[in-house]
Image: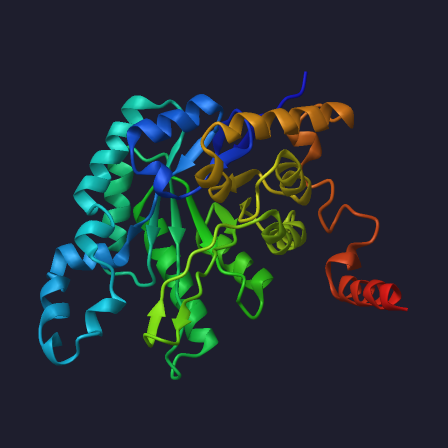
Length: 334
């Protein structure tokens, strides 16, 4: 019998498949379907910093004020009333989910600054969230802000929130730091119990006929697994935090790769959005079958078995992989 159980953020989970933040966690019924299909935990869709500002300081008034002469100004902002529910409704949903499902419910905050974040993190804990995922989605465009300053703002935010809450705290990271390994270690030292690799930055497109900037969202594919897989393998055993791999998990073998690289859990959303909650059941069956075929008795045994510190050629995760890949391609053309 294969043991799929794992531990993430101190939470005992029946398996490593976690539904990551997506519209599927907006309703109690859809979260219940995820649990019934076998998901071990769910990350709620994010409460955005802009929503907090909108409710607390009447952001809508300031956005509308004076925009008559700039007709396009408001198009850069989503309709915050329709885009998502506000902080109060979010807390109510946490409480309802905790009454309905038995799996852990991980709340999610998305933004870049401190301010009201700390208070809302505390409110989420009080509402019953089992853990908090901090999704720091920041596209730094200010020429005056250095990389050092930006990184320190992340550390300060994690430190501030860690001081105020008692539930586990995970940080969803971007892959674009100058030194991801150093940043991971600093975040763990600041109080992050887990690191989620990686945040997906959605790139806008241009409509060259209407001259509009278009929001663009594409669901991931298994090819997106490679970047977080590499860094999970590099960081495993080197940082004092659990690792969650997200982006590119679509099959049982994708989940197996995530665990073998060193992830405590494999998070997925695109596959569930495209094919429904029932896909969790199929992925778990695929994992179970693969582990039986290759004689793995547990996720614990498998975890980190192909991390950088465990493989025969650790350099394969660094420049050696780049050189071998180019050589392999050259040989095809010869």
